[in-house]
Image: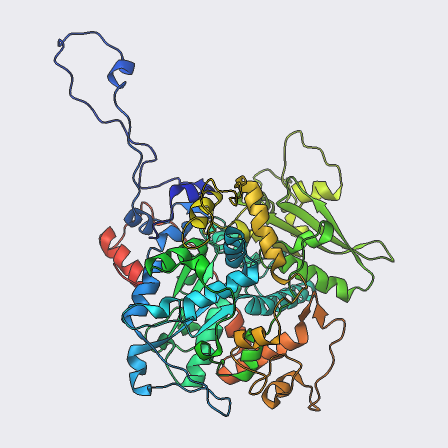
Length: 639
């Protein structure tokens, strides 16, 4: 388990299972009586005055052998994913060299060594970049360059280790996030027409693994509501492994994928049995996880420290082309490394607050529905707190509500939503009835206002609900850099800022610090392209002479994907471009992905969920240690 994960990070703990096999409290140790007289009269307070009950100890073995507890940070169960595992893997395997050819194709070098080598690929979330950007007073884009320099640059991990191995590519998860947004909007649109078998309204976001774990273990009635789409992390993993395995003719286990995420729960998501090569590469052989390892922003800094690399001293410019070869498929290469992406802008009050810092699912779906109803207006109504809000799309002509959605962040708010969606129990009284989803509260009045509906209305009225476990969204993930760590990080390794100096910035409180991280997130693409074509072509691993930097250039392979049946590249209509995302281009890139891999889009994009039943108090075959070892092996590792 990562050394930086402590009990302080688990601030959204729900409650222990009713039948937890470990006691929540421990009895004080019995001290031998002093030799002061066998018949001395005393009190219980005096007896226990010098005894302090030790805290209850719940080991990893206890937790893995039990499904009775629920926390949104249940990633503590996945101890095998850490910065140490990243370094061990880089030292254990040689990096397969991928030189670019003159004709633009990419082939593996040293095919005889493929069995003992790996292609290392990393993907980084914008929230993790924002946390590092706020820590070191740089832009989000510069933080991304520093991460790339660490993972695949000559001054990073490649400069040390037993094999000098590093990462071939560092991808931005925003690329597959755009694909996820387009697919999510299509999924919601389909649910408005007809519900798929076993599906229920509203459709609820499934990108947050802490929320998914909570639903699977405690509220199985929620599972039919969950979106079947994979998260951007999972989509990036399956895309990387499926494309590289097909293009290079190698097994999926020869591709090792690292994800840098804001949340410890993402470790748990990577360990899910549904997100392995068996779902898209067939059932032959051992399954390989689509995401081999997940680390957080804080663990990324620990990785650099373990190799004696000063992260703030790394160059803030793109990695040179010689260290970042082009992706083996030109269409996927242009899509993955297109810069800049237009999904973010300066933060504004009002409706744009619906974008949030968790991927913008709700906002994109609202904008898509607004495009389908020209002239319609989006109205936002705050609920009980800033993490609960309702969004209504109003038809301008009739004044009727044509679409209703909501946002619920944080487990305290999520539990209210869960209760509203719970099916009613059958009454034993003859003639008694209850409307589904209605919560009865003694003394609670009904105002009929939208704000009241967001706070206590029927959740089934919504068409879509964006749910995230962390209050405030993903920039507040448990793996993000905390305000208490900033002073230490800024004075170590080349920042030039020391405690007590005139240049030192007084650290804000946690709330203000989160606002700074959010600001860094929003400024990622504020509209000013501070990098010229030279920097962009370095970042994309090419030059204007041998590859196309912009999507609007000429490339027969790419244009055949983006063109209509007549072979001409068609201009995008208003409906095609939603909030800066060209939905037509995304759909055709996804179709191209399915074509080159020979795997259906349904398989590539969608996943499944399962009801997790507690086995506390049940007969279990084998000892707990054996069961823990089996679980660890199934997760892709060992002890």
